Length: 478
Ligand SMILES: *Cc1c(COP(=O)(O)O)cnc(C)c1O
Image 1 (tube, helix red, strand yellow):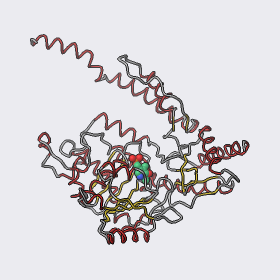
Image 2 (cartoon, helix red, strand yellow; image 1 turned 90 degrees about the vertical axis):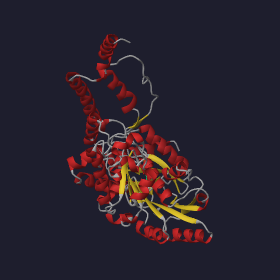
Image 3 (tube, protein in one colour; image 1 turned 180 degrees about the vertical axis):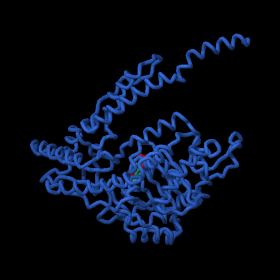
Image 4 (cartoon, protein in one colour; image 1 turned 180 degrees about the horizontal axis):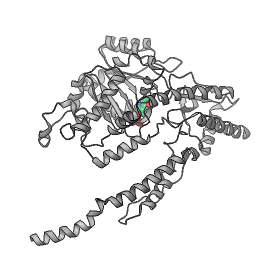
């Protein structure tokens, strides 16, 4: 191609590609549409159902351009108004969270400026913001100053990072895998077993520790299992405790488990994905011992109400975390001299990634921590309020939880499981408030998980009204 040809072709391509770098006027118009849409969505939340379900259509990508108003309308119908409305305070199933608005704006800024947050050299400020969030967590959970960690996409990836460091620190490979033992509770989140499989520990021996009536691990049972395994020539390697079980809201006795783990030089991991931030509430004492863990995870997209897509892991032994995750390459040489732990990429499987530190850092700076703590304290009280209401209606309740997840069932005279299942179906068909179910001690139960920042007393009153209505329906068709 001649130079003139290249230039003329470039001019032609620019006319089409220029669309991506919008003018200020077009940016403002687009922002206004998105802002209007967001405001409508939030303003209507309390009137919108928490759950509905319909087939999804019209989302395929074609070569056609479409106006933003059409796209927002499509989004509203196919995404926002379909499935569980997870931004709603009426989402009381699984583990809710919410999506605080200031975090959404932080995402906006992060995306507009697009810093390369995983390498300190590339963006010292962005890397430091991520590290400061980890630092804040380290202090919140009283981990020592030289602990490390990073922000991940969520609890599952955080678990993966922590377990990999544990595996490598204890050199669990080859023949040792089949002789090594990990101790869990039946109430552990399934991401635990999934992580073991992903990191090549599928053949490790898993022991389930007995639980007390409140679904907490019994330290004596743990000790007994370890002793028997040692006597059999096995290698007790790791114990996983949970601070806030997903199904039952229980906190394992962390301090006693830490003691046992230390005595046997095992890796102690605490899964605080759901429950961690309740350490900011009157429940703080129940977390005693978490600071003795070798690693812990917690999910800002649960207990800090940040939109989905941010988890955190804190690891005491920085060298172990680095050993598993540090790697270098020729094209990274300009950044190689920076202190390694300053770069999030060195303790994570991720390199290029979303600058997710800002969506936690900005809301904490903007609002201060008090509203977050108050919101969590409120959730604890709302759960107590809900349990009192249900008990007065004749429902059976699970044991008093440590945190804000509980379960219940109605004691129908016959076919109790089947009728509670029908009650669950009626609740889902109603959809005004969303609850989910589980099987606990072989019984079908309905769960309530109060964690969304928009869940208020009125929401719980609405939930109780709905349950009364649905119960009457099940009883009428007896
Ligand atoms: C939600 C949860 C997880 C998994 O976290 P994700 O962010 O969904 O990947 C792990 N453990 C517990 C206790 C949880 O509640």
